[in-house]
Image 1 (cartoon, rainbow, N blue to C red):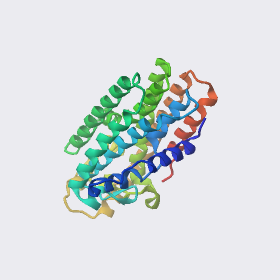
Image 2: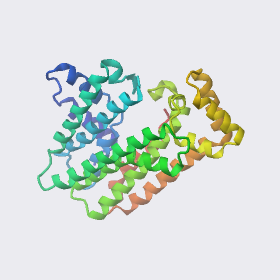
Image 3: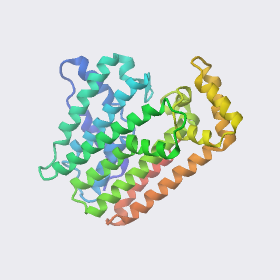
Image 4: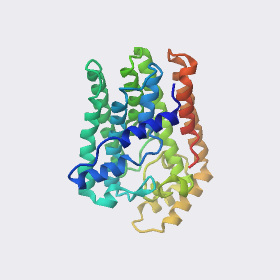
Length: 324
């Protein structure tokens, strides 16, 4: 069994050996730039840790694991174009560095590469894995459209938001775990529990991102603190605050949100103070913990021995305890 750091290092080594140095360079340089910004490699690590619970050797599992990572990075490139984002993981985004046209085309190529990598599995596994991968990709598109639609709405409900982040974020983590299980011949019941585990983890992970956007250490977070506040992004924090705010507070909130020109620091300070006053941070933290507690329940249901679950649990704990 491998712990998550060992798995991440193996993923990075595999990616380093992939050949992206081909022509036209203007197309592949942004791909290499994106895929090499590693982080924790959450999705391929989940794939391989699920696989490793049922198979000792990871040989033959790296290509499909990296398919999930490549697909994820494709979505980030296109998200940054849509969001006009300039910073990702502490570095300039592809659209900021090379322009929107290059970002769109490089992203499209990464999507194709993801399917190419996924095809490196035994023929008897490909139909189920391809079906799950494609359905997941469609759901992520659904989630992105819901997210874009929320930008022009002031009446987004908490349950709508949770469904949006399930689609946009959670399903890929869930699919990564289930895909690893499918490749490893895991029992059908385990596959469903792995998927449910990943869904809850993904929800918690996104709520934590919402929290970190306001309360993280700028030097460690890798992107501007308060970015969600400045662009009026409908996050768990904002939706919860709108539900708890007094009529007077709602008026002030909407005044800030309707301004086309504003002092960013002042707007961030106002909403941060409001979240503190309404206890929004604590509400979000408790929801995150409840989701991770649900993860533990699904983990217990897996048919493998407890020692084989330990490393996946440790990885989940490391995500919960991000102190960016």
